[in-house]
Length: 207
Length: 207
DNA sequence: TAGATTGTTAATCGATTAACAATC
DNA sequence: TAGATTGTTAATCGATTAACAATC
Image (spheres, rainbow over the protein chains, first blue to last red):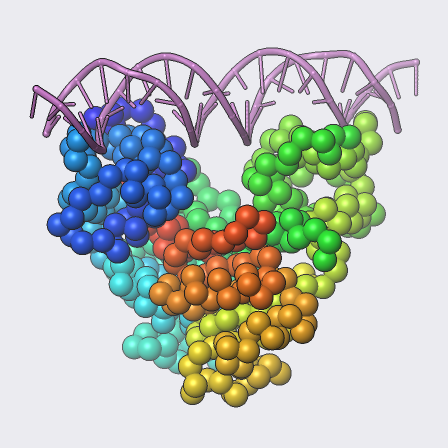
C-alpha cells in the first residue's frame, strides 16, 4: 500500500529471485511469506517489506496466490513483455550469450549482434548476421532497442557503452571487467566473475 | 591497524576492484584515496575505511605506493598464488569459461573439465580432456582443488554443488540460475545475468 | 617546519528484523 | 467466530560518510 517511498535498488534486485521461486510452484496454489522465505533463505519480514513497496498482494490469514503475485511481479519488473537486445562482441562469450536459452525463455532476445573484427562481420550466429559495430546506432534506432549487452574486451567496453547510450540504449548488461561511466538514468549491471573468485579465495584459509 | 572486527563481505568484494584499478597504474607511483575513489566512483573515506580493516598501508601526507598496496591486496585476497579450478558443464558457456583469458591472467586456471553427456566425454577443450562427472571426487581429491565452477543447467546445479562440496571444494562460482545450498564455510558467488536484466527493465519507464 | 593525507572515531544514513494491529 | 498471516510501524543492526587528530 506504499508506493510513495523510494524503492532501494537492492529490493528491486530481489524481485527476480521471488519470481524465479514462484515459477517452480503451481499457478493456483497459495504461498506464505514464511514459505517463500525458506525457499530463498530470506526472512519472511523482508519479503513482506519488499512487496509492500509496490502494494498489498496478499491476504491476511491466507498468504499469496502464486499466479497473481507472479503476474504482479512481472508487471513491476516490466518483464510482462518481450525485450529485444543488442549484443556487441561475438567472441566465445558473445556466442554463448546469443545462444543461451535462459534469456529467451524469459522474453529477452538478442535481435542484433555486432563486432569490429572484419573476419567475423557477415558471418552468422544462429539466424543473426554479425554486423559492423559502426552500424549499431542505425540499427538500435530503427529497431527501437533499449537493452544492450557488452561482451567485448575491457579496453573497448567504455567506447561501446558510450555508443550504445548515444544510440538510445538505457540498460546495459556489462560482461567486460571494467566499470562503465554512463549518464544518469542509464542502468548498468556488471557481471564480474573475477570479483567473485578473488573475493572467495580471501576466505580460503590454509590452502 | 584494526584486524580485530569482522570484515563485512561487501568490503571484501570491493578489494578486487581496488586491485583492478591499481593495475592500470605505475608500480612505483603514489596514489591517494581521493584519486583511487575518483577512478572507481567511491568515496575516499570508504576506501580508507575498507583498507583499515586489514592494516595501515599508506603514509600520512603522501598516500599509497601503488606497487606496495597492490601486493598487500593480493595477499589479503590470497591471489598471490595460482588457483586450479574444476569446471562442470561444458556447453557453450563452459567452453567460453575454459577459454577465457581473463581468469588465467589473474592466476585462476581451469585444470579439469567435466560433463555428464557421453557424447562430450573424451573430447578435448583446449588441452583438457572432458571427463565424466562421476570422476570428479577422485580428480578434485588427487589435485587438491578448492575452487569449482558450475556451468550446468539449473536443474543439475545443486547436485553438482553437493558433489563438489563432499569432494573438498570450498568456493563455487555458480553460473546456473538457481540459489545453491551449501554447508557453512563454503563460499558461493552467484553469476546472475537474468537478475540483472529483470531488475534493469524495472527502471525503463515508458517503453 | 608547513602542508597534506592517512587511519580512526563518531555521526549519519539506510536496510533488516521484530512485533503487532488489522483483517481475511 | 477463532486462527492465521499480512502490511506496517518501530527497534535494531550494519554500512557509509564526515570530521579530525595523528603523523609523514
